[in-house]
Image (tube, rainbow, N blue to C red; front, side):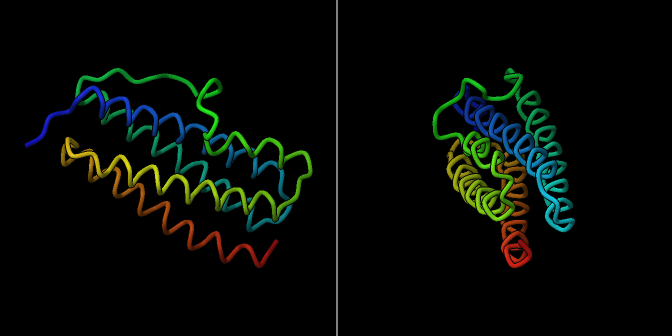
Length: 149
């Protein structure tokens, strides 16, 4: 059907870096909230992103592409979770929750952008759509947690 291009590999590696960032951000958020429902939510989301990362790495390797290792410390300025650091100093649960919502919306946009890549193999597209759907479902749940903070 379609070929796995170097461009697709790069896009998936970018998504993988952002997945690492989200995992780290959710772990940090879980460490900085007292509300048990929020703590549990952030821990679940960190584990989810960890799992996403392994799925993405396997898919990238399955098509003979190199996996970029590590996070995105030197990454682009618009990377979603880098802004979270400033919020942690205040340990404001509402701010962290709002940042998580913003990050999840951004992640959905990024997934949509990659999914719309015309040269995606069906297995890659299926994995990305599944992950995007989990993020969307989580976004619905996180909005209900806003009332708790």
